Length: 69
Image 1 (cartoon, one colour):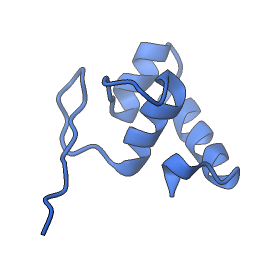
Image 2: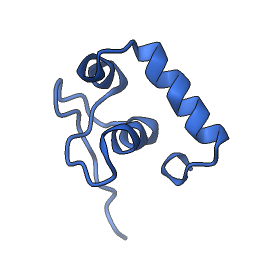
Image 3: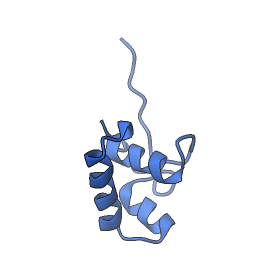
Image 4: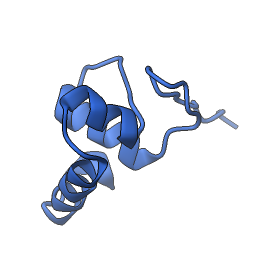
């Protein structure tokens, strides 16, 4: 059985990151990014609110983005 990789926030080291946190980092920073953030740290990095990130995640899900399935 293959072990599931556990990701941590680049900034605060929160672990494990949720699939939404991983997906939003990749969607907003670039699919090839190696820097993954929790919602709070991603919001701070992008100078927006955590609610802005959550709204974007919901929008991406509604649009059928593969990163959020």
